[in-house]
Every structure is written in structure tokens, then in C-alpha cells.
Length: 404
Image (tube, rainbow, N blue to C red; front, top):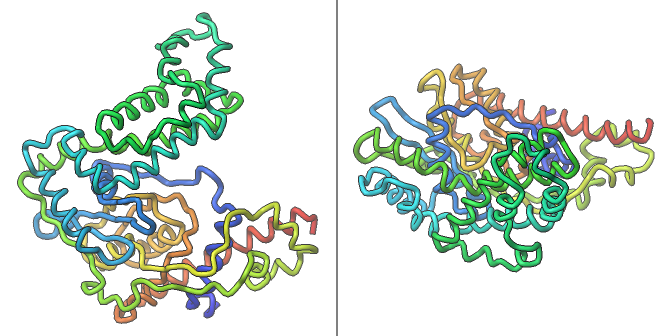
């Protein structure tokens, strides 16, 4: 197990394999959202640009007054530092009261992320066939079947006033204007929360998975409007300019915060032969084509993830229960590492995770060799062993599929 625990390239290769197997099952998550989490999540969201690897974690440090601690996957750039300063200055400005007041900042800092989410919303309407299913379902309804439905078919239809072709042609990239962005938010949120769609999902009628995808895409986009009022109100209650600081490579003594790792296996089947004893039981690795999907990378840019940077920054000093906000749910390895660290350190960091494998995840002991904490190595070992176990289970499923 020593090679498994210490070999970053092998670990990243196994995470790539888990990803191609589609681990975990769809919908796996653990959400614990309190007021602090909601506030910190909103800060992390507004700092995230949407560029590759641009993930943020945020926490409160209440040991000497109140200060917000910021971290990202990698060390912050000069632009990150300037934008964070502008954001916290805006939050304390009495002239900033509603979401539209922060729109210029969102349009500049978060534009890539916003366009990405609007594009995914468009795809959930057009490319999945949801629009056609929606129209057919409306046509099959009559007033008697609506019951206490608050909207008539005609009223709902007005929220989709275009045909599928014209929706495809709509240039969502123009959402840089506040009016268009707010119009998208209003229409999508009304539809996503309508009783018409909620009943469709609740009763699992044909095509309900497409509805769920549309609702998820809508929820992610609407956070840029729905989360900001709460953030502004909370910041005003704190009074004055909220202090903040960044976790940097220098402050943690990180020597290898980011590193390009070469994946030795050229294909998933080759990686499976090296990674799992159960691969020998497969009569034909061609069986794996029913289980694996997605691209295979030969070079992975690994880094110490933002969640681990926050935890290492606090060490074993802090409140018994610590809250952390994230720009996106934590990956599988972060969730496993945090759970083990909670046990070793006695400080509970909440795990809100989608449990998706992320091959960019780097071992803490590799990134921070100067940190003399035996718990770090134990946390790394636990992550490596659990990833190895999950991978064995997936390959065993493939062998079982063959009837071995």
C-alpha cells in the first residue's frame, strides 16, 4: 500500500479511472447549509470566475474579532486580491442594497461562469428535447386536470414564447446586459418552481429527468440573483468593512502547490490492468466499454485544493464546529480527507460534497513537506486507500457483469 499512498501519478490515474466509471451514483451529496454556510458560499461564488481550476473556499476566523479567510486551488493572483478587496468594500457600502447594485462586479468578475451556466440552461431546454416534451405535455392538459395549479397552460406557455429553433438562435452571450440577464432569471425561476414541473418530477412521468436537469441549471444560474440580497444584508449587520486575508503558498510553507503529473497508462483498460487485481478475472476488457465513458488525459495539473488550504491554515486551533463556504461542492478526495482530519483533530469541518473524483487533487504531505503533523500523512493514506477500494468495487462490478 505504500506506493498507492505516496505515488501522486498513480493516485491521479485511479481518480481518472473512477471518473470514467461514472463514480459516484448520480445525486450523491451531503448538504448541510446553515446561515454562515449560505453567506460564505455566496462570497465564494462571487469570487469564482469560471476559468479552469478556479475554485474557492471561504471560512470565518472568529478568534480575534471577525475576519474572512479566503483560499483557492493555487495561490491567489494580483487580480484575485484586487477583486476581493473591491467585493468586501462593496458589501460594506450603504449604497449597495439590492442584487442589481452588484451586477457590474458580477458581469466583470463572473462573466465566464455566468455565460457557462446560461449556455447549460439553454442546452437543458433545447438539446435534451425538454422543450418538445414540455409543449406536448401542455397540449395534453385540460383545466380539470390542473386542480389547484396556479398557472393555466397559456400562462405557462408564455414563459416559453419561442419555438425550439428560435431558442437555439437566441444569443445568450448577450446576458452581459442587466435587463437580459434579469429576464432570463425571472422566466427560468418561475418555470422551475412551478407546480406544473414539480408534479411532473414528483410523479416521475416520462421525461422527468430532463425537467430535473432544467431545474438544476436554473438553480445554479439564479444564485447570482437569489444569494446576493442575503449576502448584502448579512454584511451590513456585521457593521463596517469586513476584514479578509488570503491563504498563500508562502503562509503555509507550500513547496509543491501545483504540479503537472504524467499519467503512465495510455488507455483506461491499461490503467485497470495495473490498478486492480480483479482485472485478471475479466475474460475480456472489452466488457469495460459498457462501464467507462469520457476522455482520458495523459497529463493532469494537480494542486492542493482550497478546502485543504483553509484547514491547514487553521491547524488545530479554532471552534469545535467550523463552517466553510465553497464555490462548488467538494470533490471526493476533499470529503474523505476532511472526514479523517475531523477525527484526528477534533474540529468538525462540514463536508458538502458531490463526491466526484477530481484527478487534480494533490496529497497534503507532498505539497507541504515542512508541516510536521503525523495526522496529515494518515489523512492522505486514508484517502488513497478509500479511492483504491472504490476502484476495486467498480472493476468487480464489471467482472460480475460478465458472470465471473
